[in-house]
Length: 371
Image (cartoon, rainbow, N blue to C red; front, side, top):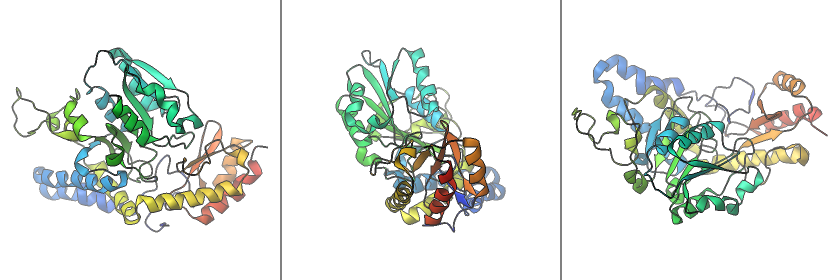
């Protein structure tokens, strides 16, 4: 679909679930949005740096179906989720937080800290059942404060019914958070339409933006009800008022900014937005799914540890093999970028992969399959 605009450390790059390939425009975007204006303007650079953050928001918004002003740049997913957790209003009877066994560990680490605030964590069983809306029924009880769902689960590639989860949570007065780190840039996301309370994500993976350019999305009405504890002068309605005795929250998602924002990661990440928005997520998704279908049809069904169900899968694949050490050596020799998780080979598809990549992977991994 589009290989010409990226750098590849391997001939056949299947690691977008870990770190997306670097756009060739990254260095120029970093220079234009961060380094060059700093070098030219010195302390007067802030107007340009603020424009860089605006460009990041505007580039990301169509990729996640949101308005730019509802996006707040963050250093990482963990930080964003911590800010959300500590901003929720206390509600006496709502003492439970619901997540699943398949969420990325950093999510569990953050939410476990909520036990210090008196919350109880409820872990839903993982696996294929997470695609069933009824699996999420325990999240909509009157004693639940928050439910977190992951847009695409990294160890199964399952996509839960995010829109339905957000709808049911809203009807039951439960706050909802979507972790879209493994989804943004590779599958369609419609935050405005789905209307969860919050979402968190990162540019590191399918957005091809590198580390440090994460983000928090907050639904407008929810943000106005929230009171973040992790604040700073850029969480203030008037950051340049400079009155130490007066603080008012900035409107909407901006109240989650905290102190002086980082600029460089977001400047570079703009290069990824430019490429992805040229094609649009719907076309990228269709491309990725067509290549996944080619892979699934070329190998026995029983070798896939991740879901193969069309319409319910993300862009990642876990493949069972007899010997990880042996297969890793052969894949490396074939120039196939991959990693392993849970004792199996893990690969993923993105807009810069093509049929030749799939066929090379199939030829290289077939002698090592289980069974």
